[in-house]
Length: 282
Image (cartoon, rainbow, N blue to C red):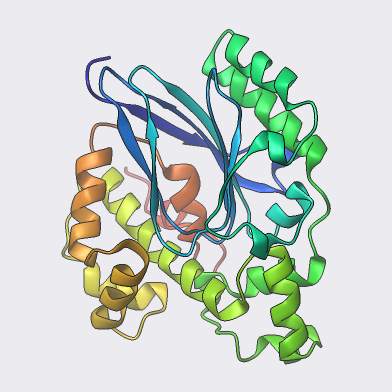
């Protein structure tokens, strides 16, 4: 490798699938890399091999974590509503926090050594997934249902949730904050934004990153118009939609693979992803 980094995302193991949406391996060349973490409603467990795992709690704005030159990171993206049970504390205490794993889990030293001694990054990632699968608690089923109803392809907002779930708005907000870290309205905004990010990543991967679809993507993701999307982009990432597309194009056009994240977010009302609906070439 030269100065470039490689990044590959994959679905989690079956044992972790109920708790995580994707996992990743990132390997860095001869220059440090600032990895951007974008709000997605859940949390991230990441480990620079040779160091102890860390938990990056639910984010309300983008943040950056540096990976040293020559470093390898294995990571797990937790689903919304999982982090509280995994960390053993209310999720709202972890919002925008970067927490050392030793502050949360016993006997982490042995896992840190095992990850550092793993033969390959893939083996290390498998060990991290096994540890998290054993440590995760059961998600709140009501919050889990709320999260499903707030996904971009449903086209629903938060107003209908209390009646749909037979719970008061106040109780829903309390349980959502305890499990997810933020209330339903903030979670809805973040998941909607992930619908846009998914379209950006798909465009970079499949078409090279054309900005011709920005207005259409805004509506498809649930925004009133492109101006509405622009306001949310600035709030969550500090950039315009066009700048976000250019940033992803520059960072990921060398072959970074984010499909495990963006394909599920592009599901339509028929339950299939956009890739599954694309015509098969003759």
